[in-house]
Image 1 (cartoon, rainbow, N blue to C red):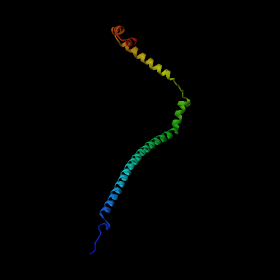
Image 2 (image 1 turned 45 degrees about the vertical axis):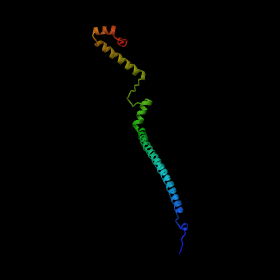
Image 3 (image 1 turned 180 degrees about the vertical axis):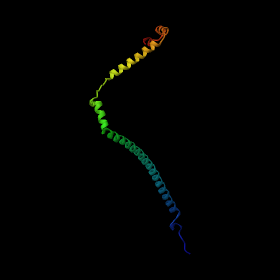
Image 4 (image 1 turned 90 degrees about the horizontal axis):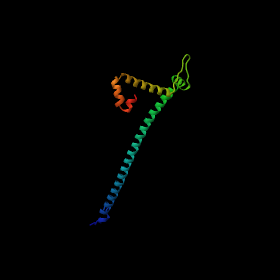
Length: 141
């Protein structure tokens, strides 16, 4: 009879445990690396999306600037700027420019005129009542 040694076989119990342990280790190692790669892929995709949105915003700004540049080169804009900044005028035109203070004075005069109209429309007893009993702001009117 031929006796076979149990430990001499290709796949003994201790060898199968070692191979199983190595297999589990490799599986865990590959799973961890896969999870890291998926996380990095997600971060990269989010960055790509942000950069793409920045590209779209910059493209819109670029288009706006191109439109502005084209408008600035038109004769209408050049004439308007010459009129506003250089006091350019066409033949037969008279240019009148008012300083900003005059405009503010005009608004004050209009407000005083409106207040005077309101006072004229009030009855005489109402004017006396306002004179004696109204607040300081109302009596100034």
